[in-house]
Length: 442
Image (cartoon, rainbow, N blue to C red; front, side):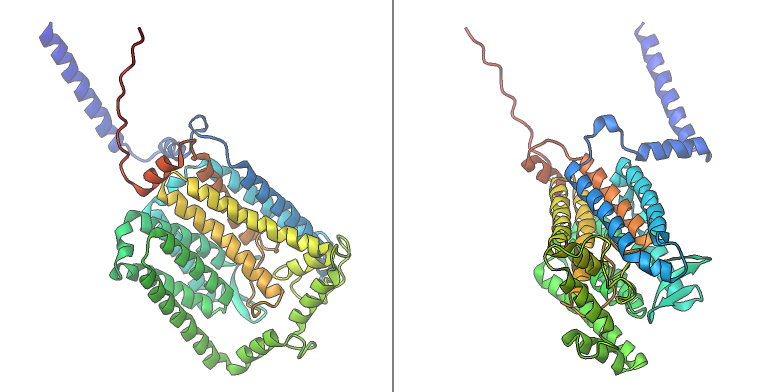
């Protein structure tokens, strides 16, 4: 009997080995592909719900942004011979596609993005698109800037893809080799990946996006554990790259272009019919709003007085129509977005989720700050959109897709104490629990 049981076990083990080898050698099939995709997806019964405060903040920003973009764009649409809702309809279509992407990515395990091949692949695609913008006829120029890639009648900015690529790539590199950040030599791969992107963005020129990507990458490596002296050195190196690119642009285009931009920032009323026209009209729109605004749809500056009212300067229309109250409301919504994003990052179950969540949150926060600073003339006009508000299909879909990743990270948050979560994120093995005997009662 014992020999029979032993033989049965041996046959079972051989069957298991045979099945595993057959699975490894199994040829490609659509059924197998679907099975692998389903493995990437998160099973709802094992996870919690998404972070509802973060979801509601995004929903409010999206709805408010669509309304304000429609109000700021219908005058320009009519002047171009289109219907007043022309730009609003297109933005709504992009919003629906972005919501679909957000829903799908909120259900997809965020560890899917942790693969090194995938992160380098996204970076490579973004870098290739930037090269096509600069060196091929597919590049499109608007307002003295070559930032768009045109394929047929569709145009988009590859820089939006590159923002997401840098977040994923830097998070993956930091998690896979955390000790690299402790050495100065270990920072070279990050610089080699960042510098070519900054150079390509500066020659467009796209100074605001260059600053934004640098801020995101520096924040990620700082959270990843870089030493302060090394952070200062890499910051100085990036500043040198940006300065070199600016000097090169000055050599090609002449000093007058940058001098006029700088003077327009220092004195926006010096040439209101020429160089400072856009900044002046933006300040007029902000000042005309007063405390409660002129009312939704009652802006005057959007009737072709303020250029790019539907894009980079949509916040000026918000101030004019909704006043100080509306402007503060928008700023607070972005502040709550950043606060809740940091909360999700602090509760994330591992370091990769924390870094990705911080990168996406800071991308929206920094971009909103730079846009509002440009509109209010706090910094020189560099041209950057306001998240969820400015017209642009690529930006809106990418933002909503990234929000979906943050929502998926929030679904992995457990009710465990903060100490256990931090230990798991740091990769430190948790101490075994002491076994306590049952106290017998007499």
